[in-house]
Length: 193
Image 1: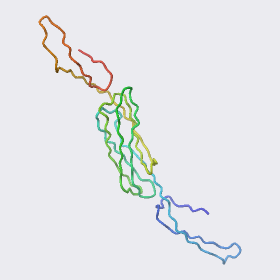
Image 2: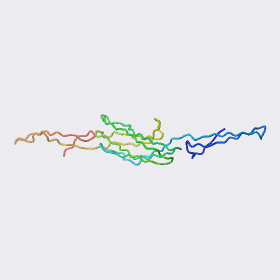
Image 3: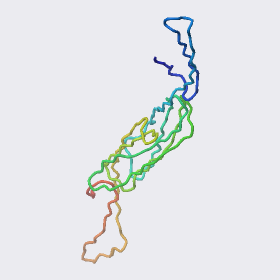
Image 4: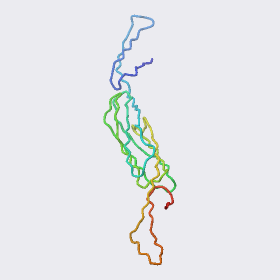
């Protein structure tokens, strides 16, 4: 015997199934069995990230808006994890932090939005790529995933450091050594005009 339930039967709500048994030899001999059953909960989600920039700058804060829809058959709690898979440019030792978000009971078919801030590290180098992985998690199992790729843009910056410099030049001329500090996030040579 097989019992097929419609897709829209809510989970954990009991209903009764009546089985009638009739003898093949004596049609007046019948029996009835009543069984209480309920659909098992199915946890399922869809995730969508609203449009984000592809290029980011050091120290930038990016607000990631994730829309999560409960497509399961029971109200459920949402647990989002955000992790980074980073492909560093040689020499880049920057650390990208992971985060989590929780939402209490989300009804069947309901969508909730989460705004989560991603902090681009201060010392990240131009060309480093971070793939942001977003997952809806239940008991250490990913029920839905999505991702977005960030690439760190070039940021130029130089500073002339005149502290502790003797700017007095002898009448016959001379050289002044002025330190030049590189403040950018990529290897580059200064260009003097």
